[in-house]
Length: 487
Image (cartoon, rainbow, N blue to C red; front, side, top):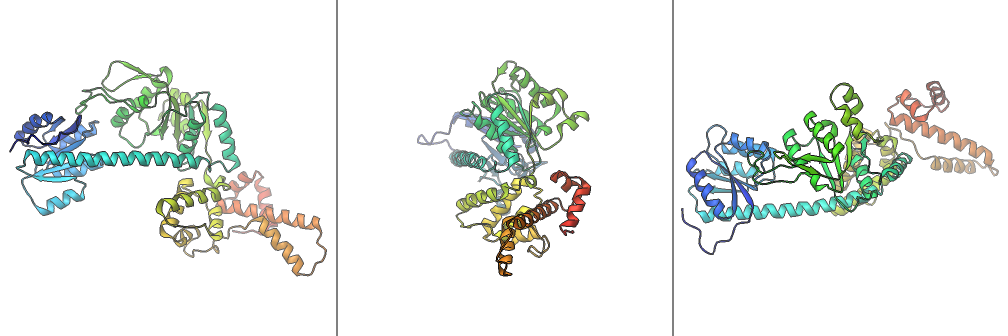
């Protein structure tokens, strides 16, 4: 293998390369070569060891992976690497230049492929290329995150169209600067993160960071290192100190989504942060002090979990200083037209496909639909309308196979009913229309349509409908009879 020329480019500083190769001579060679070029080096003699390091929290900037290894070969190791951390670029090494192997590696996400024996310059160029590409991707992702944050802030303007959400915003305004811990509960997709971001924007911490961590998205050990950081040497592959999310959120807000999925040991460590405002990094002995506003969210019943021993009681009461329950979208139907219009404009801009509006027929279906996936489901449906440039697939999903209103029979607005009633009186030749009679009939028609809408929303669950309408079950049955409604 030849030496690099004097004019060779200098490798990026502080980048770590994980070398996975069963050949000791290759590991030793790269262990000596790469530090001379400014790289940190981690070594693994097989795929199993490499996966142990990655699953333990090691985060190399690039992996050099041999294809031919005993036990778990390079292709299988590559597949597992991408399942754990798909963002780490992988360069494959092999003495076999077999086309099918190269294709398999590329299809699984390998960034490059080098045949053994290789020139030092060849490896150097491959490392620089994949690291530059990874840097560009990270920068693009950062820009996308900024755009997402901007869109999320914009969306908060549209979430407060209903009376129930207006009351929640009033609570947020009251507690925004009180710095108390807030627990947000509600079904998946109702907008808990939007509520959390709004609380941050209303608080005196709004110019500091809002840091979100999804507790269900990472394994326990990775979640711990993500939250609290780690010291150099804390585990295999921890080549330098890394700050955790709590340190990044200092003087800002920390949003822990799906808090119910946090393991008991991590619950204990989180409790320490809430009580004392301090913690120790993984592998560390010194306490780190932070000033963080804690916001947690869950779609599960934490009180019930406490009773069954699935969640720490002391942590629950620490989190549950202010409890905000976000109602499902089916209980906030006033928001549906506003949200649908917002999503329509957002995705028309994003995909550069013009869709002027949702048809009246589909909107009536939206208003009568139960929305099990809440705001997220509405957003996805509108996105599909924009992308497909058609309402037909959504209409079929909402109305059933017929794709029409016939099976659903959603109610029309009381205003249009009143107009039709007056028009009918005029057409029948009535020169004098008693205003009192019009008011009485309009009220009856409005009551009928309100009752019909709630029945469709609850899938004709009469007990649930009676509760929503705040009438007795007997009164509801009487009203159904008077209005001539039947399921």
